[in-house]
Amino acid sequence: MKRPPSPHRPRTLAPIARVPGLDYGVLDELLGYSLRRAQVAMFLAFHAATRGVGVTPPRFTALVVIGANPGINQSVLGRVLGIARSGAMALADWFEARGWVERRRHLDDGRAWGLHLTPRGETLVAAMKRRVAAEDRRRAAVLGAGERRELLRLLNKLAG
Amino acid sequence: MKRPPSPHRPRTLAPIARVPGLDYGVLDELLGYSLRRAQVAMFLAFHAATRGVGVTPPRFTALVVIGANPGINQSVLGRVLGIARSGAMALADWFEARGWVERRRHLDDGRAWGLHLTPRGETLVAAMKRRVAAEDRRRAAVLGAGERRELLRLLNKLAG
DNA sequence: CGGAGACTGTTATAGACCATTACAATCTCC
DNA sequence: GGAGATTGTAATGGTCTATAACAGTCTCCG
Image 1 (cartoon, rainbow over the protein chains, first blue to last red):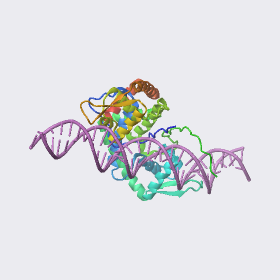
Image 2: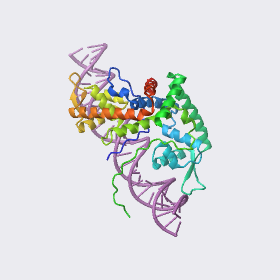
Image 3: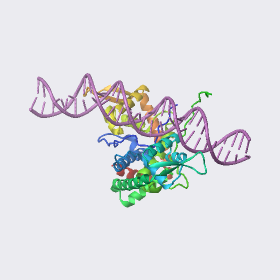
Image 4: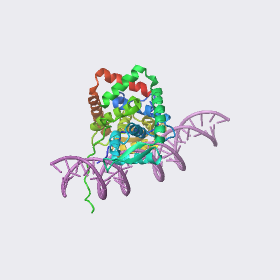
């Protein structure tokens, strides 16, 4: 049995070019396809904002969530990201190796580690959040303010 | 003690769960994050529509584009999908191995192959398009018809 | 006409990411 | 106190993708 591929990450840095004169058939009527194209476009914005730091969207999400929920454990983090525990651990290792996150033993649960941003991590994440949010808005500037709000609303409604 | 080899377990694709009581910080204001969540949701619809055939979104896109543009070559296909030529070739190999697509020499360009759906491919792709479009609409039924159209418009505007 | 440079398909290689499986330690709950 | 669930961890393998190199072909200008 084939394993379904992971949908959580854009697979490529290359924009999905709109090749002129080509027939896209049914694709133009599928929300899924338009979503993917838009997501790739926004991924490029994200990448511009985090150039050279090696922070991918899942890593950024993880850092923000850890910062907003100090002491969160790796299993919950995996659930937030939609990945397996082993993947969440690899993430935590990666952060720890850079001194951005540290593991502290949970007082009330001897199995779990609590994840915390280090002071250095705090600083870095704060700056990254500013840059990412700015780029996100800049790339979305083709939309009016009302359109942007409406798009966010529709997306969240769709995502459930 | 070694355990006996375990049978396959159908894997449930993990949506990006909204963990209750968790602070998502800046993420809720980012188009990029909402796009990703919505895309995962629609990916689940896609996967439901193509269960067991092994057709991923890029593969589906490729099949539709080949069907709508017979004789397209692999480089252009790669550009449409946003992947490198070598990846487009792996795709074509995969299709050809299943007898869905065949390569024919271009008459006017000795370097290129033209990709064509076989009769069997035609049949399969037609059925797949129906199922995918139906699931896409079904999953998007939380939106009104006007909302769906508006969402498509905004996504295409954003994707450029 | 001829050759430089661009393009096509192809192969090999390497890397990123993720799931699965198994296991030990720990917690929960009856 | 014990069965079963949960947590972190490690090992392994699969899928997708890019990169680089190569040969054959095309384009186009000198």
